Structures are given as structure tokens and as C-alpha cells.
Image (cartoon, rainbow, N blue to C red):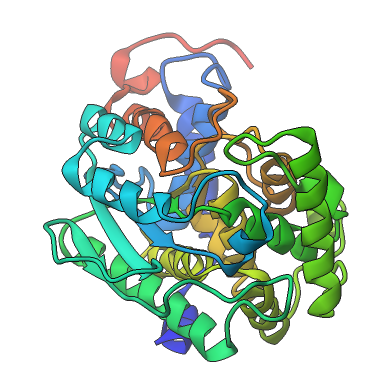
Length: 366
């Protein structure tokens, strides 16, 4: 399934990109006056291969939930059982993600890919459990390569099912206590940046715990033999690890939700459906997806920039510009949900705004 999905992904269509740029210039507005929104619409034209691109609605949020063995190292004061408690909160409609999804008219699906306990069946819950939490990444690999592939394929299945049910835009979500530690480790590997540059305070930790967390990330990279594996620089020189190296890195220091999110991104790209990325967890997963197929980011929009420093590093490496910067650090898909109306508005312009010729409006002389 992974190989089939990768084979279906195509880079942005050059002809559609050129057509969309030219079309933006013919609309009744000064050229470039909608700033980044114009670039979003052009990006979605290239991703879909059509100008104007399809409206990215209805949208579907998938929240991938899993636990992490590194939690035992004291990288967060929050107890691990919060993961399963928050899953119940999502399913009952009581989380911030639910409130934002209701505001945006987005469906919510919760996917158990590695919660540390069995969950009862419930409407809105999909089960693709790979394990009962990962192993401690600071002591050795968090999972096997086979588990990493199973996680990727779980995300692909969820993306396929949501698209088959009518979704025309996918939004990433996550839940997993201690998952910012795994994210920092992945981002360090894929961007080549030091752990201190990409490790943040997660759900809110004091200075002592933060210093310990940075050391745990460094320890994880050392134990698993993972020095910085990528080259930083301008987009033309940006590199990613080879797919086999990416899989090993994912298995070594990633979480089950990272694997599933990477597959979710690949599944959306294969279906030519845009994927709005949320925060640092999605950013780390997108680095994995990009290493498996460099064309995957062509189908992504960065919903926001998290307060986590690793997220800015991941977006820079992916060449993605965030739409919203509100110092969010919640996860769940909240930043992606806030960005969805902006993405829709960007595309709506392409569909509804008249051209100078059609409206009989005199264009500014060149």
C-alpha cells in the first residue's frame, strides 16, 4: 500500500501553476494585493492540476492518538493517562478542536494508532492500533521498521476513507502526551539542527524540565545512531534523507501518530486533495513524508506556526509559509482548523471574482 501510494503522487503541475498566476493577474484587484492568499490559491492549482482549483470543502480533521515510552523519563509533568482521557473528550465533543471544527463546519475523526489502553467502540473513533504506546526512544528504537510502515499505511487508509466519503481537504490532528519530545528528535534528524534549537516546552514545563528534555532528545539521537541527516539551506539545496534512512529515523525516534500523520499526508497527496498541516507534530511528520516523496509538500498548506521552535525549523526546511501565527501550542488540529476558512477564501476568489475584461473594469496600464 505504501509503495502504491508513493507511485501515485505527482509534483505540482507546472502548467496549472502558470495558468493560475496569470489568472490571478486578470482578476479585478491590483496585482498581488491579496498577498499570501494568492500564493495559496496558486499552490492549490498546482497540487490539483486545475485552474481554478477545486474548493477545499468539505474538510475532515483526523486526530491520531498514541502514547510514548519516553514519558517515563519525566519530559512532561502531565500524566500519560491524559491521552486516553482527551480521546474521550474529543469523542464527546468537549475539546478545543471540536469547538473550532464546529465553527468551520469540519468533521472530526479520532484514530487510535497507539493509545496505551484499549478503547471502547464509539462513534467517530477508528481503530488502527499498532501497539500500546512506543518504547522509550532514549533507550533504543521507539518501534520497529515494520511498525513504522504499518503506521504509515494506517494514515493512508484514513486519508483514502475520508476522501472516499467526500472530503476535499484533510486537516492533521494529534494527541499524545510526550509527543513533542519525539517531534524534536525527528526534526533534529531531518533538519540537521541541534536538539536545543528545535526542542520546546510542549504543554508548559519549567527550566529544569526543559533542560532535561533537551538532554533526552540528544540521548535518543546518540543511542539510535542518528546525527543530523539533512542539509540546511535555501530551497534549491534543501535535501532529505533517503527513504530507507527516513524509515529508520521514524522507527527510532518517532511516535505511532507521527507515522500515521506522514501516511495521512501521503494519502492526501496521492488523491490530489490538499492537506492543511497543524503544528509541530504535523511538521515533524511532514518531514518524514517529504523524505519518502519530495513531491508530498506540494500538496500541503502550513495552517499555522506553533510556538514550538522546532515547528519553524520544520516549515523552513519544507519551504512552507504558515498562514496563522497566534503563538498556539495546543495541537489537536486547532491551528489547521483556524486556517481552513482562509484557504477556502483564497480559492473562492479564483471561482467568484470577475476578470477585468468580464467586469468591464479598466486595468492599470503596465
